[in-house]
Length: 510
Image 1 (cartoon, rainbow, N blue to C red):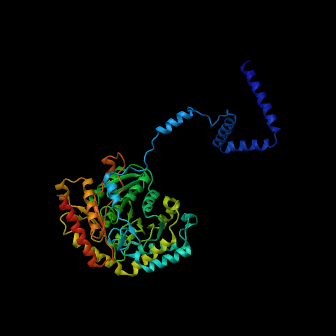
Image 2 (cartoon, helix red, strand yellow):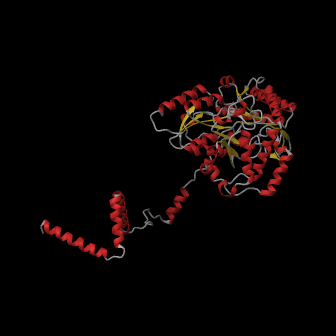
Image 3 (cartoon, rainbow, N blue to C red):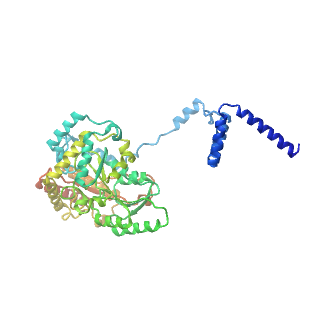
């Protein structure tokens, strides 16, 4: 068969196929569609042809079983042997000798907490180990309001805020906080710890850049870890080093695609107690075009004339801070956390923040307690002034008069962090474990003399973590929480007990 005969044979076949196709009902409509489609958009016709051929290929493909067993079948005896040999790894690391001794001597409170708390052994001690700054746990008006709310709304909403968990008291506390801070909007979370660790990954994603103070708390560290962003650390509260890091980021990203960039820091640092230099950070974030996330977990309700926080204390316009994160579980003795900012920032979190979207809403009783506590702060200036007087009284007994410890906290901070002086650590060649042991003995000695304090603690470092991965390690210290539930005289007396206990332990360890 030559070429001419082959062409004739092919033409006959195509003609016969065309005749048979025209006999099919609806073939004329289909032909017109294909013709017009090819003339208007040939690429679309090619895609449709590819999809048609793919569907035919899929339907004609040989079947295969998804239950095909590709593993070795074991006998019952072999399975029993493997089960006997298997040893599960512990969920948590085993306690060391120091941790076991600490747990055995851990005090147990009986009844309500307060400035004077009763232990399981029957003794009553001065409690300087809880965040009861304004003694709100003993406020009868708050208790009565909480009971009324409990009877009206029940224990909890049992649903996430975006579904059916939001109640009128939640909307009220959001409005109250926004009004108190002077921000356009606010959103509340059911857990204080999960607030900052959800806010950060809600805005910063892989490829974005976060510049963080080395001494930030554990919740912030979890948030930046979850975000999977590029992390740049700067030395604690060192504004020159922060400027160096920001300048390096800007130069490094000059010829790369634009990314979101954040500075994350705290108002009052949980691990050290000192205060951020907010005016300088605001100036740098404007100069280098970064967004600022400020964690005011320990400064909200404490700093400023009305307890607004570090923005009020350092006279910074609240609008200069993109996101203000705080806790309702500390000074207000309620529960949950919040993030305040613009309307766009708040509404974005209602769909993108994991802790808000996938957690049950804050119990109505805690929302009401927070609202009432906030109202007390705004109307009763004596609450703030009384606790500040007690802070001064405790400082006078500890920091300048002790030869062994110094306070790293800001003078306005009701949480006093007492670390061993550098010369003491150097002279006695104390490692971190040795410092922890000494501090725990001081805690025990204080408790023996009727004053309960605690140590500064953090989450343990990851197993097999290198010094580069850890970056910054917590300095062991004592933690003393001041409360307005004690008089100035009682506070001074407790300070004397703490100072004498420190001296007794240090002299005993010479």
